[in-house]
Length: 407
Image (cartoon, rainbow, N blue to C red; front, side, top):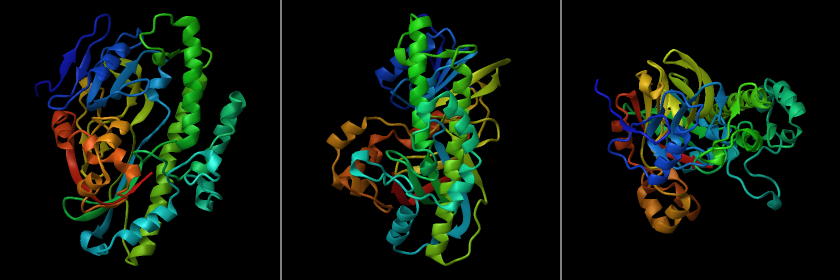
């Protein structure tokens, strides 16, 4: 198959292979990619996915392979953010005509949203975590305590009380129908408050390290830890733990979601007929082009040959369960969604509640002013994004949401 990417060659950097044919890419994102490409630790080339857009620290939708070093800000602060989906034996006609009560039940069952601490209790945290949460936390707590001994500021964070909670922004829980009318449950969340604290802490330490050792960084957010550096091992440990927390967080929410739907529908059904749980903000060691490298996927999903992944659209568009094609040039990766075409601030200025109501017609979801920044028009066209990466993944299931709970 002929190459489906374009190549940008920044001066003094490795090439950037861009799977962006037919989708817009803002100049600021290209500049951010070029900055990363100039780092001496980057291996071979950078891969840019079709949902690529300007991010904090590093470009969202980028795959950055590095030799014997990791860039904490490229992983970001929502460490292990990702998706989970599972197919059920329920069919569309098993769902009630009025989906409002189901959405309300899910909103009551799963803590979501957030707010300033000055307002009292965090609505996005458990006041008293249920026993199911504590059982999962028991498998995480020892390693977390060991990390806190090395970095005490991580102790006073939202950790146990955020396990099994959704968060804010573009995090969501959905009930979807696939192309055959089967019901799927899908959700999007990460490592919550504790992951944010771990990410923020090590990004600060990397910047301090860079001031002493990395004089010519094209962007201070691209500060990195090299193997052997004081905090390299601690970061690897911290980021690995946060990624495990994120995966468990999604599993706890999915279990809670399934139990809630069972209570609402009074109809027996099986789940996990097909299930996927994948990160899209993370780093791990992999072998590519004959080298062991750290691969940072910032808004990208692993798409090894035969591996299942999830590419969600916006809250009014289709989402896809995909199977990886194992494209070596992309470091076995694909996009993590549609990708924003505008900032949250711009979306709120451009669109109205009426626009939101129209764009999410047929979906049982919030349609108020506080979710306009998530309006479908703030995102790239998911069909164009899928076409641009046809050599990275094949579509297995096409999902359309009927219920959407936003963080």
